Image (cartoon, rainbow, N blue to C red; front, side, top):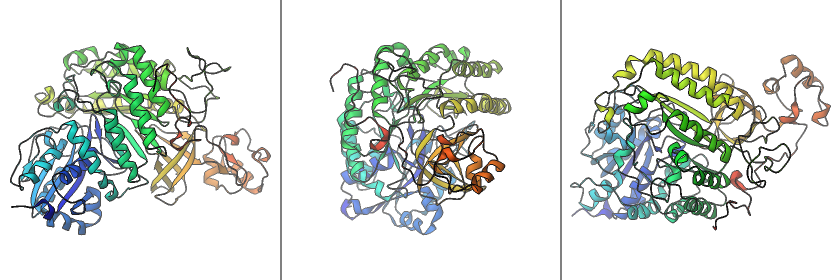
Length: 610
């Protein structure tokens, strides 16, 4: 008999990127946490469970011994919507296979890798299901498989999906795994599940393969946040769902009260959280239920932290592609959904309420509205903006498809609205989806046209849109510094689709600073430490400020010291948005409470009870 108390287990996280689930550092997905919890539930002691990321194993080959010597080795990972990553590099199929060969014990493969793998983690790829030479492949939930495999003395298991009662237990008992993540505690954001599965069947998407939506109770999610917060986690994203607006409802109509219970509960158990973001929001929900959606979005934006993004799955603005791929929303409907999120969530902490002179108008004089794009807007990121996902290589794609998509994006910009992110990618086709038969053939045929179109979108839409969303002078608190390149230090805030910021000079990595934005690229920005001390700033820092060239910067340096910024002759440049003279404490709007959320007495002012 195999006693679970005597077993050792190693979990390796190869990272995941799915339509409604993300787990590339600084994110940690639910898979390793719930798998660890399931193992504990099956009788494995916490101290017998080792967790490593794939990047750890690359950097320290000695840690491969934990894989080799474990009685049970569990690999979790898989990419169904691969992108570009800064914080980690997802495991390639050959690496995963090598780990299976390394293990002397029983091996279990699970996560979205079960849907298939390609030659590499990239778009326009054909995929096929492959056991990668593991003893067992979890064709259902890897956490359920791990639990049942231990319960069956490592002899096997029946593929199944776990239920919400198991999630309640496993989410709590598996929270300890975050202690073993190399980014813990300061630079780690936990992906949270509110539901999974999808009632709709877009041709290319793997989310419907999880079945119809299964919603957790608000208290279940709040308890998981509580357990993670007890482990030192301060950054959370409600990203594991197809549509946050559907939470707590019938699967279609929004339930603002359930969202208020969810968000209010999270704020209650983690009052010192620093990030509370989300990911997916279905634009069809907004157009079908506009009033309830406005109320729900208001609840979210009153409780979240700035810079939040609601990703919209438009996928294509071409009606031909929409019809052939069961896409739900038309370009016109998506544009209306963009308007609604801009109105209810596109305001900035520190903006004046609607009743004040010069403020963005709205039906309630006491509330703030967006889109907040005026020159005198508060210097913070908007609370909640939409993002747009566009997928290419779908059935019915034609040259006109690219023009439809560009016209849609141009209409958003020309109307004065804001998008936080435009994600343009090529499809991957997986078994079980309608795209399986077509595969990557269309994407491969159109690859040259796709690259030209993508570059045009970056140059003509992304760059001016970024200037609207993050104008010079916008302050980003707590920028985590990640790497050096070309004499600059690059970093990001923790959050959904965080901006990459270049700061002059090589600074200590692994630290965090506040920055003020000075300039824009296509998808990244440049900034200086905030507030910048004119009496100590370097030549490179000063010339990063708009309007200051090397000649003016040199004059500023020669004229030091200054008693105030007003004493500086900076020519046409407005230094007041970026700099101070000496050590001065400059308040950042909306930062009066940890996480930059609502103040201690703030509540959603929507006429419903908490």
